[in-house]
Image (tube, rainbow, N blue to C red):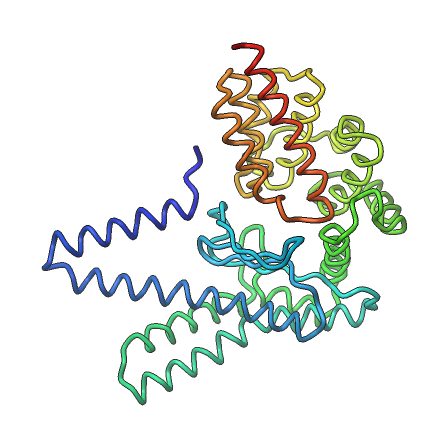
Length: 358
């Protein structure tokens, strides 16, 4: 089983508690580490909350935000808190959806304000904590101020940040109206539709056509990742998962590649899922494709692990993973409707297979 952030946090807390009581001479060090941990998590959470507040001020719709082991999202029946299963997101991330009917210029302003609200929140809270420490002398506030400052400089500067952009880089592109900013705006519109109340078959036909045209000009799915997902979900809802994923796999010639797993992984998992639901799963191909699925996509990753366990005739573990795969989509509208349907279908096939073997 993949060790998730909450598991890691729990082990760390138990370790510190054990050291605190078993090694009294180390209590001051343990206390200091604990204060650093609380202050750091608080700084990350408030930074992401700043993004959310900035987006709400501009009329955007709340999607979710992640901080440490916690994932706070908007579901079908309101806000809920669940476990963050991705190590890659423990540093914090926020998603806001654009309000309907926004022009491109207005959406650019909305995104710019939302983007800078995080660093500005860190700046304001850093100065506030510094002032409180100066007047009270309580060291906890000095540590909080330090963490807010670290997060401010880590996010405001246009530095390389792996698959993600820093807030400073994103803001620079937005105010300079670069092609990357235009792409970011289009992605925001698409994700807003994908997370909306309508199931894929009811999504905007004009967006679908625009995504198709952009896909036709692209040579790699990494260039049109959001567009390809948009088209896939619409076609899967219309034609079924097998023909929809075959078109994507054949068009982009997607093959397992660990370096590009964050982009290729979902499509590889959907390809194996299509085989699993149709009863044509190939164990050798499954093993090959599983290596190309990133754990950053917790739903598809867990579902792939369910299929791997099923292929090894470990029904209990397969059902456990399918339950994990269901959790990220449980309260989602939009594409989440399809993902829930597919995950339920997979779990049903696993149960049926287990009864047959028994």
